[in-house]
Length: 105
Image (cartoon, rainbow, N blue to C red):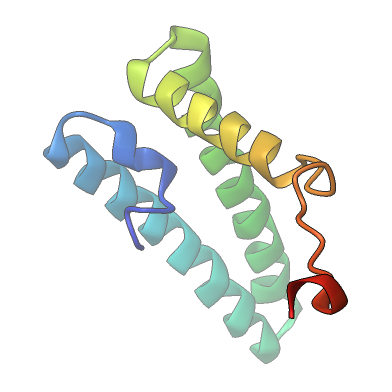
């Protein structure tokens, strides 16, 4: 994953970044592999759905725990995310420049 968009980039220790990314990628890989195995029968399909739900909660728990503990990497990511959202929702019509070709030309 590109670190420009990865919220785990704010973790200061590179080995922890790698650890979290490997664990999350393994969880999601197992979840999707079990969903694909569901084509062979109903039991693997049920297991796949449970695995996807587990992966969602595991990913959520990773970020929830960081927010609850006040980890610096999470607060930096949260600030960056909020600033990006504010910039995207900004009213751009106030700073627009109307170009009138009759006057300019």
